[in-house]
Length: 119
Image (cartoon, rainbow, N blue to C red):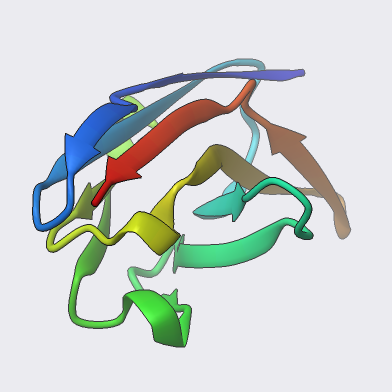
């Protein structure tokens, strides 16, 4: 079982920056991807950014050029640097880790961290 601990959310003015961190611990066998999702009130959870074990990244169109995802494989930690924040970025941000064990993928989720961007 993998446990995820997130940190770094908070309140920031539009145009500001925040950095989210998510550390994975526990019985880790083979992480194939780490990422961030977000869910705003009344909306579905959506992908923000993902990074694979090989370092490939993918971003939602709405955050391209403003957010950067990175990971420290030695620490099993993923980061999300968020710059030029907008009020529409306000949401609960969830860390996700995808692990593959004997050909079967397992998803783990963090508890969520609130990001609020004021106008």
